[in-house]
Image (tube, rainbow, N blue to C red; front, side):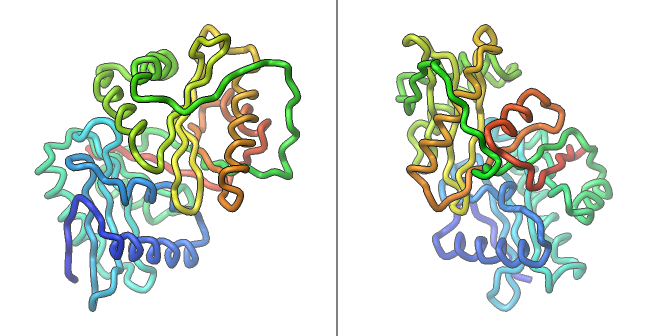
Length: 291
């Protein structure tokens, strides 16, 4: 097995990963593209992402991605091996190289991302001493399940500008527990407002920012993330209005792409909001923290 380690993928390598992803998905019959995060693969940032490519006779048969969203020392590990090459030790070889990467990056947190329907991935995570921490559903918009919500609430959705980073950061800090990662989250927002394939939205009510959401183009799909309404404005129906307007906008802008999002299993309020807006569960991911 020939191993290549890189912090960025060429167009040829990216297409090889996409081909491998399709072959794995076709064989396994469950969704894994959300964990691989295609949008990120072609927009890697130095010090944040590392990739391990495994080749046999010049054909890509294995892939590992070590992805950092906010803190370069906190990584999510995702991977796949071609069905014809499983249970032959190739994944173990790639994992040894992954350990070298985590040591070189002085990683203090590595999270294994496992498709919920993959017993093999979850078994391997446990075998490696990782502990389950949380799970997410992947949900996809289904127009047949959507009963558009009529309302008289006027909200303004706009793509954020670089100078609005502080406003977005405050909204995220109010909505999520970002703790000591405050400055790192600020850096992430700043990068996403400039990065191709990402759009950060600010939602205003009477000119005052009350919500934010990020939209990313994942190749096959459009993904929604980082959605929060400031606490003092919750319970007024704004979340549903924002989802309605965002769905309408994305269907017009990307008519051939499915719209997806991930949501924590335990977040019952968000689950209801998304189901009311026409989203349905199609899969999920379990997260295991390496010790």
